[in-house]
Image (cartoon, rainbow, N blue to C red; front, side):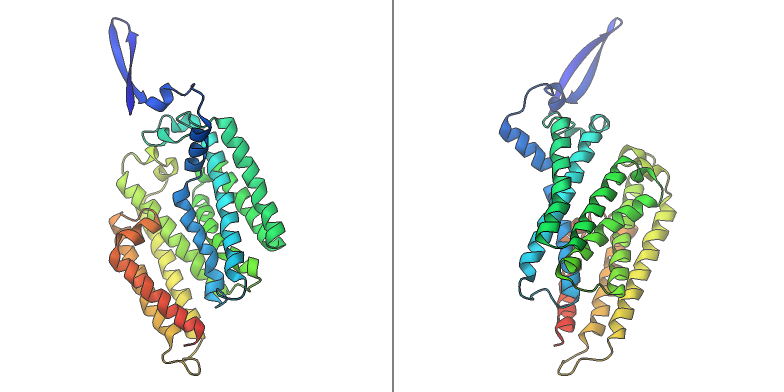
Length: 324
């Protein structure tokens, strides 16, 4: 993957290593290679996060209402377009810095497979299409939310990612916006407990990931995320512990507020779901404490026990919402 490049310095010869993509950065990419590079830059693996658009309708028991799934599929696609726009613009802007990074230098824009102007152009087009599409296919509330999401994320790429605490808030708000989008598109009122639980649950996972990065990159944190050098591991531990506590408390208050089992229900599923929710948070906290909480989806898929607990919680929650 590398090409040896020799440069004569004085009487000696210096041997440099640089990625083959950089050596051929001036070569015009084929149309297929360009499209493939654009798709890679859009981070398909990250699209899974947009499944959160089903959260509000599921919490309200409206997930299978007539036309709901079709509308949620549209919202999922629009959020994917918006997020892809942000990634494209971010990589075009950071191309020079990424070329000096041992991993990021292989990103298509940094490697020269996708010209920066093309990434800017496609990203800008998608950034406009997402809220416009929401206005046409959903409603004004969803369009405003998507426009705010794109604006906030671009501001994050430009400057907010360098501001202490604000960077955590912006990333957390991005998750919360995804969770709100489905409810806005379907006209479902958003419960205060839903917003608090979702918001602090997202902050828990975001800060746990930052804490893990801080632990793993101790002494060289700036090599992957410059702002990590400004945080202490103790502070990030405090944030994820605080966020976990608030998320659990809000969820329990929501479950207890609903009272006893509904008429005809076999068990108080809402209240019982508290057990699964708390156990899931405690299990996730094990990885956070070890400094092994990376991407949330990777943590869940890697740990079978956590995945099973999650399924149990979904079943209990679903039964509670359905009133069984």
